[in-house]
Length: 210
Image 1 (cartoon, rainbow, N blue to C red):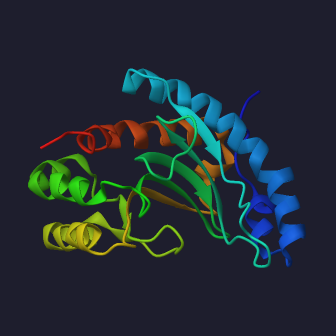
Image 2 (cartoon, rainbow, N blue to C red):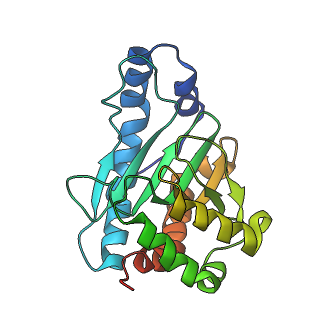
């Protein structure tokens, strides 16, 4: 089955009132697309990693009142879960798609990962394109471009990731809902693959022991 792209109803999902109604729309509209995207991308990432990668699609099972503001798929090297591991994400808010390499606060060794990245700051600057964006919190829409951050901004972000328990480090792309690339499934998959391939050395670096 081919991925046909994202469209307005996918983004309008997050304008639906009520937990049950919004979750039903996520299940009907978005999750089937995530399944197709994920099955394609785990093949590519497994080849890059040299080991099996596993697809996880957010279920939002802990929510009892407030409907989710976004939803996502995650790809990680662990079959049972992804939050405690470096992982790749694709997801939607109501106004954009995000494509991330994600290091979130549940990581047990995030301090060590941050130290690795700080020691290899020159490599990170070389690896990460200026148009990519950085977020420190996966729950928020906010993200800063690498170009705007500069070396000092990147260093401060990594120091915060190292020192603040709830701080996170997500790096990748934001694609606005009206961007034509989202309407073309083939082009979007190519963009996602290219993003993950670009960030893969950073993923590998996160596993290095110092």
